[in-house]
Image (cartoon, rainbow, N blue to C red; front, side, top):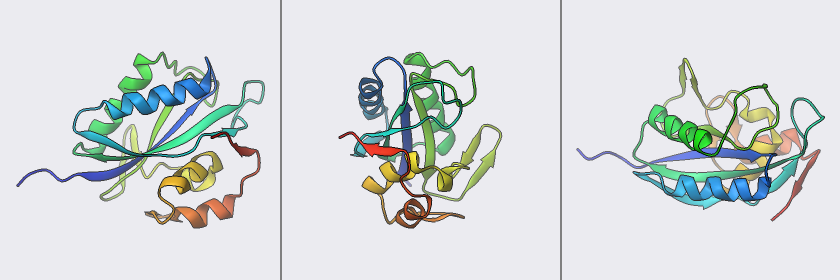
Amino acid sequence: MSPLWRPAYVAIGSNLHEPEMRVHEAFDRIGLLGETRLELRSRLYRSKPLGPQNQPNFVNAAAGLLTLHSARELLDSLLAIEREMGRDRGERWGPRIIDLDLIWIAGAPIDEPGLRVPHPAVSERNFVLYPLADIAPTLRIPGCGRVADLMLRVGGLGLSVLT
């Protein structure tokens, strides 16, 4: 039996070193992953930082993929892209060149060391939900609900569309 292509969704964020360019670079790098196809790109959004406020605003987006990889393999590839782009995992919620979060991949929820799918905070973060709603508004995230409904529930405070 041949492997199945599975949909997956990735949140992208940056607030350092020309963040809009870093988000576009992340889209490009994701599009080059083997056994993975970048199918959908959201608009870009500007958002206030989640943690310390003495840092630049973020640029956020979402990518819709089809992949033959397992969740762990895809996450490992996303973390490799972060490292290649210069990500420093120092301060929690601090400034970053790039942040790539695996929000959901088709299949059962996963809760393993270093891998939780769906992403544990997806239902609370407008900077994830609004871009995700651009590309997958009817997506049902297990344990959370439909993306469009979640987006309306959290509201758009502090968020603006860039492109």
